[in-house]
Amino acid sequence: TMSEIKEKVVPEEKKPKKPVSRSAKAGLQFPVGRIHRHLKTRVTPQGRVGAAAAVYCAAILEYLAAEVLELAGNATQELRVQRITPRHLQLAIRGDEELDSLIKATIPGGGVIPHIHKTLIKKKDGKKKGQ
Image (cartoon, rainbow, N blue to C red; front, side, top):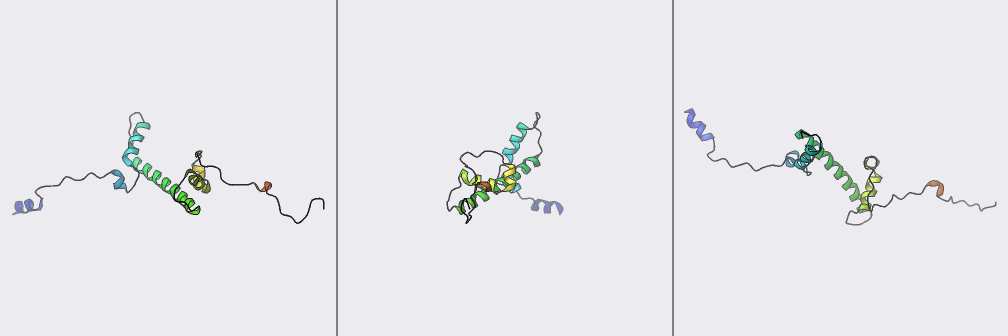
């Protein structure tokens, strides 16, 4: 009968599902829950922020961090060292036009970008002075 079939299909004991973080659901490394909490405390008095806003914000932050770290990693490889320093971050950010316009902050320990203005460079002429 139908009642017997229904009873066999339903498992007797269901295992409780393991909690899955919103970061894992979105396929991100950055913490969606923590970003959502910070958005709620800062945005409005009522603290109403959509769930997708935190995921989107976390995705943007993760992308920017990955971009900067990739460029800084390339700078370390060029200099044949293993560790990323503030100097490498500075070279990476200032070397990329879009990141340079986005990040206006001073990086402590970053130094300056090597640049000599063309008017200061001596021209190598075969002529001597006075001729």
